[in-house]
Image (spheres, chains in turn yellow, cyan):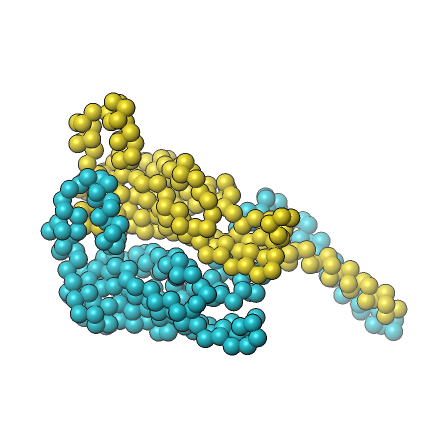
Length: 190
Length: 206
């Protein structure tokens, strides 16, 4: 009788254990950033920018703010190609809620200096375009990470902070961040 | 014996009931695989390095403490002072300085959420990055030598946020690690310490 009870209890415990194992992504094989992570980061930062005091304290009567963007700086252990670094910051800049709010807050986005330089070299933009651009602020973000590993377990903590900097005096006017972890189990050759 | 068996069956039935009630929950969609920064994973638990959740906790505490102590720093009552990231003294031996840099950014971001802090403190980019930005944009107002930039960087009202990280380790294969982290605001003009955080200590036993 005792053995039957023991088996029954063991079976119940076995039923419960899979729920615990899935707490950190189950049997994920990689802790690299996924496409979903990048989309999540861009959406979260856009929401935070939209809801920020930095924007809500401004109005149409505020001093004009001209914002240029720089590609995301990657200081993480993961590889983020340059095209994706640009994609992330463009996604933030062109997020519909941010654009709509920018219009009502006397805030204008201008093309990045890299694109202006390339355009001038190709003869697309003239000198007048370059002179009229005159950004007052820069918007960029930095991806950082910290890695912990032991045996077959590895975890990467990703932190991405978005900043808007005044180009006249270096003051940070806005700073927000998104942070999350990715955990993986297994060997590289699994 | 029968009484014990019936009790066990009753308990099992209750347990199964709990499990089955989970089945009727509404669909949650695919899990994202992302975990919260405050959660501790098996890799972190078994690693000798400081727990990221401890770094996050320290970051929260420093932001809260500095915001609360602002009224005790006379300069910051009179002027809107400038704070720039300073030196990190990492004596842990095994934790990369970039980990502390990441969470220092986080502290700044937390501080900038406070209206009170923003009224008294202005955070600025470091000199190298600012000069590089001005060169890139060809603003040509002299970089950090412009009057505006000089006024913001007046050494009398500029403070460096410095950090110290230490580790004491004992046991076979360093199974016990004590970490201590502290932060200070140092006046740029004379190197005096205007504010220090309470030391944050965590002992990790693997």
